[in-house]
Length: 481
Ligand SMILES: *[C@@H]1O[C@H](CO)[C@@H](O)[C@H](O)[C@H]1NC(C)=O
Ligand SMILES: *[C@@H]1O[C@H](CO)[C@@H](O)[C@H](O)[C@H]1NC(C)=O
Ligand SMILES: *[C@@H]1O[C@H](CO)[C@@H](O)[C@H](O)[C@H]1NC(C)=O
Image: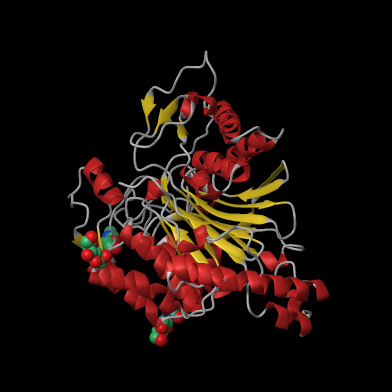
């Protein structure tokens, strides 16, 4: 059992290395006007000088990289961070094939729906932040949400009971329908290609993860040992039938536009940072984030203690929301950011299994889905794209990223704040420093958090340099190309 984040090799690159893309100086001369599509921090002659400096640095770094890490590329063109290696790879494969961040996020999310049925499914509810960063002067991140408890206004009025045994209305699985509608709008790859990795894993088999094996044992269902090869032929067949159509056709047939609701992300600004988030816990998470950064914390423990204090106050109300989820972050070569968290009201869904092989999930309360984008206030400063698996984990992870940064921030000890404000420790992981917890006479944490613990999966962009971290709590793996 490792305790460190398994991050992709670029996480070891010096963070100061910027502007290494070989096409940048050429673009500067060619006029950047077209569509305001310039890269970050592009400038005039200064750029050329910078480019020379960068070139020298690039050569040095390339040599060092060759020496230490073999044949990795110096500057990744995109990155995906999720809680399963196969799914992060499915995402970066989509980027390599010419896909955009939405293609990568959709491919990874569908893959997770097959590999991690204890946390997400084709019928998962979701919360997604989408941001084309190069348009950030005029556009804020857009929030799309789907699923959750069905609003009372959507429930059909009770029909005269003509046929009491009429079967329930069939509807498409929600994650799939929402991703089809978003893909129709933002995708670049063919829809069939986006479905392909999930189909192959369902058809050819995948290794049961430790998290899945543990969740199955807890649910008392048929248990497979970790590492057992599992196939989902019915899911593979269902997804294959959907390869015949474009996402636009499916979206139209399913009423997809109404399934992914566009909304306004919750936003907060504090201590030189801005953050946007979605999901039922977004308000509380952002409030705790702001409390940690204003006034500036003395260190990461100080930030953590203030977050915990703020969460405990919120926990006297309806927070935290319920549910389990799987979070991912994707960034493409055009600096489009997607933070996507998909989740279920209960592990494996509330059922039943449909004839097509997917399991329904009908939440009765809003779910704890916590995608986020965090930026420092300088244009071209550091930006984090975050798929967090609970708002409590987001608040603690985001404050640590802002206060300290780096993989340590993702791996830092966190506590679970329960209804009423009790704190639960994550057994098997380092405990938080005493300075990171409320001071005496507050009771010390006496409870154990229930595994699997919420992961915080992150892609960081600093100027044009990408780094990605996947939380070892989720068994995570960040992939880039
Ligand atoms: C009710 O619907 C079921 C299935 O749709 C059908 O088999 C049955 O005949 C219907 N009963 C009546 C009374 O209409
Ligand atoms: C499953 O795990 C085994 C051993 O850890 C590995 O050799 C195999 O390639 C894995 N299979 C898949 C489909 O990932
Ligand atoms: C899906 O594709 C098939 C074959 O091209 C076509 O017959 C069908 O009408 C399409 N379905 C939708 C919902 O557009």
